[in-house]
Length: 89
Image (cartoon, rainbow, N blue to C red):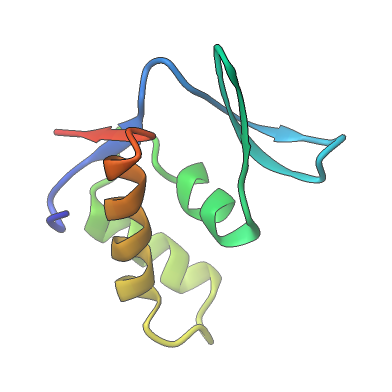
């Protein structure tokens, strides 16, 4: 995943907060994926307008004491794209 890529949720998925799960989830026609806190925070800023570099900047500002957050974000985004949760331009 390049810093200029603009990830967005795959059109067949819906991302939302699920109070019953106390977590963000990805909903798809056959079921649901419950996300951990980090995954939810990252996907929450994947709006199809921000680049990977912008997403990292937003999350670095929100979580300034997290070491190597940029590398972790890129790793997650790469995995999410491989799982077809995200598409990017």
